[in-house]
Image 1 (tube, rainbow, N blue to C red):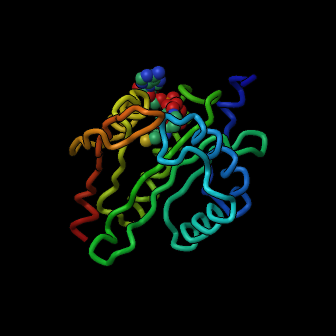
Image 2: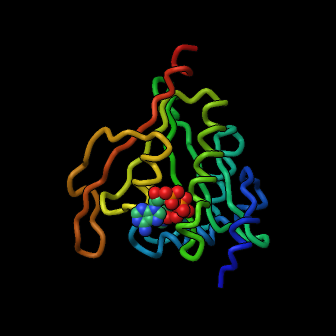
Length: 176
Ligand SMILES: CC(C)(COP(=O)(O)OP(=O)(O)OC[C@H]1O[C@@H](n2cnc3c(N)ncnc32)[C@H](O)[C@@H]1OP(=O)(O)O)[C@@H](O)C(=O)NCCC(=O)NCCS
């Protein structure tokens, strides 16, 4: 049972190495819903740890929502590694089911985007399944624009779905 005070007191904080195991559990819960992410289960903990440590080491933006010591949501932006794409980052996020629809996603994405702006990212991009109305509404609200649709881009449990490509371009950072 989620108490509304849990939502109000949820801490939004940069992801640290100590959050990784709990983050892995949250990622696995959302992936196993088979609806929203590009995984159907979390990759093995060692792989997630090495990916997260690389991101933390590079200073890429990444925040977690923590309730009573447990990660209940995350939002991160991973910088692209090729030199000509290093101004770009890809955003991913998720919240475990009982904590959705109560404003935590907005708090997480705002913290992560603010950090990305400070870090000089010029382009932040994402792809979202076209039937994920809540995520699309959140992305619209914080300024993402639709750049295109990839038809039948996802195949889950025998059904094909489109994905929508969205991005924010930070013109001020581009002028630097
Ligand atoms: C998408 C997700 C991160 C959004 O976080 P959230 O905490 O649930 O969202 P919020 O409560 O901050 O609501 C954000 C906005 O979504 C919209 N929204 C909320 N519930 C909605 C619903 N059931 N249907 C459509 N839009 C909805 C509202 O516009 C809301 O803003 P408002 O209530 O302030 O007007 C979260 O629901 C989630 O983890 N979903 C499953 C995983 C996922 O989709 N990850 C993203 C993959 S691209």
